[in-house]
Image (cartoon, rainbow, N blue to C red; front, side, top):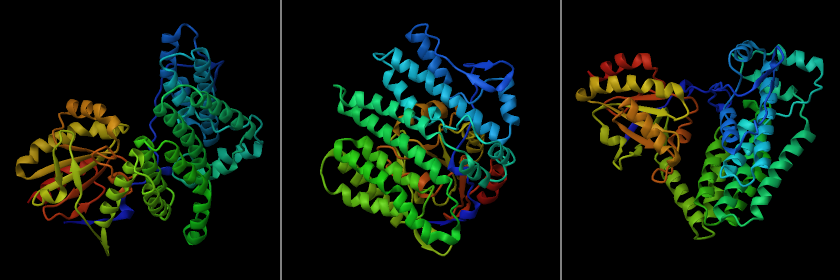
Length: 444
């Protein structure tokens, strides 16, 4: 067993547990000389060119130069209003593509975009009261995480516009459900609709002024708030009992609840485990085996004061596997990262330098990638470019159903753990600039 000292207060936490990176693309037009205004239109050249345009706007968060500079300097109201308007324009563009090219080979991908968060507006009305605008404008964009919650509570919602937008998505999906599309496709888009609605719920739930002293009250509120969605999700597996994808999504949903609650994940895990025993089809079996793996991993964490006993198991991309206890006697760096984390990828060549420098002296690295099997090719591309020749473990993959990122509440990336020769976690928040001296220190 590895003796791991966890100092939870040292873990980096991002606002709302989200990793946010800005992407700029030349794909929209500035309206007049006002950088706060944006307009987008599908070119209507041909399907190929129009699809290229949709892809270009997918991750756009501002228009280059003038608008990006303005957005960087904007106050919180201006930022939220611009983000909302941009998403409305993006949503209109992809809707236009769906209606113009209903037989496109990219139709399903476009519909996934329409239902996804980058295209989901906040539905801020045009006639917001000046006093609300003034109050939000005075809130800081950084340095006060509660400011965003306050802003979201102050923002009015155009419920009619939101209902119209949701109805459009419902109709697109209902057309698929009534078609001769495969069961896999139908399950995929029912799941996408669920994910859309949960995304809206999450935004609203984050606005609630939850304080520590009201734990019992909020525990009951949490259960009531999420109960219908939870039942709807289990209902999807009942409807598509062969779907391993939905089974995996149920686990991901439970993991996601860890961002909001300490009690819900355990409650839903137990309910899902009981539910998984009701059938012996592929989806149910997948859910059952994954929950068993989670329960075994959690059982290994026997909390004793400030110590956690855990023997983590890793499965590499090359098929090799090992336990953390196999590395006892070495200094080990556990690198939590993601393919969507540019700073993680940027640091990898430096980790390679340290690995080559100290490996012969007893230094080892284990990478834990916070993405499933679908990220395999991208992971290989990244590590091959960096010549990162240490074990890489895919969280939530088919071989590794347990997510260590979720289990250890890793919310900020990159996060690195340093484990000494005795198997003790001596630092659970190592910065890159500290690594060389710390590795040298613990190798002595």
